Image (cartoon, rainbow, N blue to C red; front, side, top):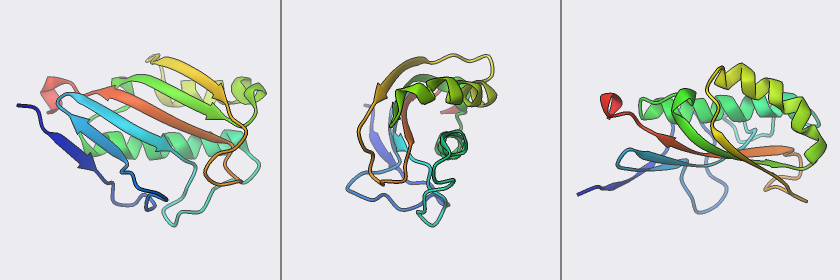
Length: 133
C-alpha cells in the first residue's frame, strides 16, 4: 500500500497558509508553488524576475534533495508569472538549472501572487526513481 507523506524542508520559510512544501505518494512528489522567499520568509530581489526565478529554483532544488531527487526528475512545472512577457527573461534561468532536462510545462499569467512583491512562482511534479526511494 502506498502511503502519503508530507514533506517540510529545514531552511525554507514557513508556509504562509495551510499547506506543506511537498507531498510524496509512492514515486510521485507534488511540490507546492515554490516562491522567491529566503529562509526568513522575505521576498528576494524585489522587482527582478530573473533573480526571483533563481531563488524559486533553488528552493525547488532544496525540496527535491530532501527526497533524494533533483531537477532532472521533474516531470512537469507550472509557472505563474505576473507579466507574461517575462517568459523570455526567465527561460535562460530555467536552462541554467534544468540543463538538458526539459519538463512538461504550463505558463500562466496572473494578476497577483501571495505576496505583492512576488513576480514568479513555480509548482512541480517529480518522479522519484526507484533507485532513490
